[in-house]
Amino acid sequence: MCVFCKIVSGEAAARIVFQDEDVLAFHDVNPQAPTHVLVIPRRHVVSLADTEDGDTELLGKLMQCARRVAEMLDLVKSGYRVVINNGAGAGQSVFHLHVHVIGGRRMRWPPG
Ligand code: DGP
Image (cartoon, rainbow, N blue to C red; front, side, top):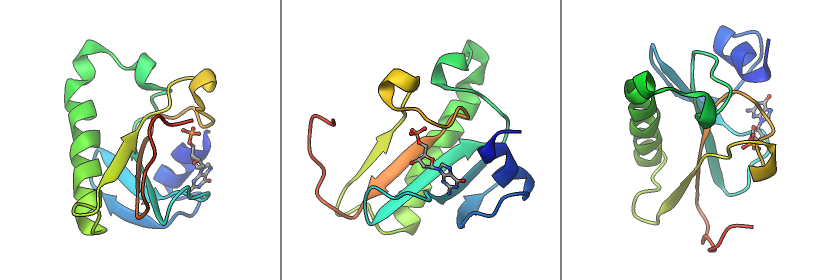
């Protein structure tokens, strides 16, 4: 079972921010900014590239959850970044789809 599936099942601990029947949001164990939360589907999906046309609702829920997390953690006024690393070449290291919500510091562009 992948590490994020273990968080979904409760087998592994995480600092959970929000959850409902489809998605889960929790603090990243290796934060890249003062606030760094991961939003994941409960269902194991390897990456964005592994989603299908029928996953529109799930992808929408991930984005809605990212927005909600940003509101809950007071990132709206200062701004925040939403990132999906797709594939090892783009920096994906956990192969369970996740959306990074990063904020609390000034963001640079382009990302490294
Ligand atoms: P990515 O590199 O895009 O696949 O991001 C994976 C993120 O997951 C990375 O920022 C570290 C985080 N992470 C890895 N393992 C765990 C864990 O067991 N718990 C938590 N909370 N975060 C984890």
